[in-house]
Length: 620
Image 1 (tube, rainbow, N blue to C red):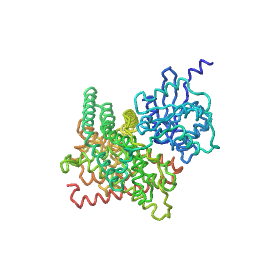
Image 2 (cartoon, helix red, strand yellow):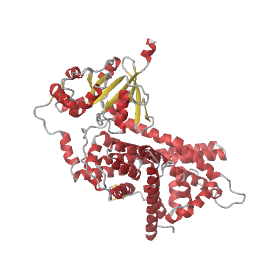
Image 3 (cartoon, rainbow, N blue to C red):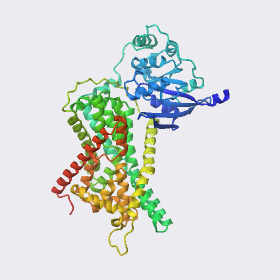
């Protein structure tokens, strides 16, 4: 029995304040041996990984959500508190708590460390960013701090290779007894923090102006800070087109060659049509946009890892206040550029219930990465690839404009929702973390996880819907002697023509109507749906590589612009609506969100179509 117990992995949990480097330490320890899910019954993210200590001991490591206090004020903090205390829905408490503190900001982080120690569970205190603390001239007496807290204290540099070696060595023989605090302050946690800082931390007599202070003079400046933010966003969207083209061309060539290989190996018939026109044409047309999506995520990860995002939120607090929101809404809305689902989940950090609800309602207006394949396809087909002023990519300028329309619309909707309310202004108080170079390991892992999520969507949702649409587009077969395109006689063609009277006033074709239906499950599916429709009805050998010239020859610019306007607003994503229901606890907000977004989409497309016709951009 004892031997069996020894072979079981140690169950440990990482806890700490946001911005303490906890996730970097988790990535350092577990690498790619981690999985991401949600806690049962809530949308709080659960990250779990495995590692092996130098002595061969297996450890199952849980990365708990960041928390400022165990006196929970948000769902994230409630999960962290309950898991640490062993009160979360029957889940056993961790055998070891690893509390990560920022060594450069112990005045704030030590308070949370004391709360964790007072839980009465075996604990290790980890001081992260010890190298940065030394550069600032801070000298921390680790043995003295360990004696005061009654538990081991170890220093790490989570972003440095082998920077957690001392912690790994300690995990070979972790503490089994709870901390024994030296209570000399009458239980006053703030007094204890002040005493520990006095007794265990030595600061330089004369501190020179820190690099962070000099950078903040520019980054947080009310004018230049906004200029820097806009410049960063502008370069980000330029990069989506400029940097991604070579890998996109390589992927497209590979998919084309593979499709031709399958076509040459199989005889003509349903099986070949299913593989080439259904699966490959559907999946391949979406996979080609993976480089653009990963570049967008790379920028967001770099801004987050560098410590810039909280500063942008602070900087934009006054701008957000003009729309009736606070700077706390900025990070959830920026996260929605990657995907509205984590963006909506991130609104849990907004304490004001009304601000949180409005942020949830406008998050779908931020241009998520699922829209990027649609935007990229239409921009490539209808916007010439040339430089403006000899510097700026014209296609990137159009993409930037679409993002700005989404942002402006979101702020306008927020202002309209809150203009009749009498609100009390609350000052924005938030921690500004130290600037730091992003960890290459964290960036690679973040991009890898996003690529896996995207490709899994391609392999499940997109391929499934592409095959279903292929079947609808292939059956029934045209009657003998039919002169029209085969798809005109199929179920998909009939359905598209049935929808056409509703969408003809905004310039949509019946093929677009067909693509809108599977696109309700996920926006990017509309691209593969168009490829499937035109692969069946057209004569090209590879719809994935020929879709752009097909659209540019068969659609007018007015139609393309109308469809772009539709996708700025339309809530074509079941996952987004599902997470809104989970976060708000009912269908009422879901119905309100879908209703107003579909209404805006139709109105925007109608106006765009009419203006484009007036400018002579309609069908010739």
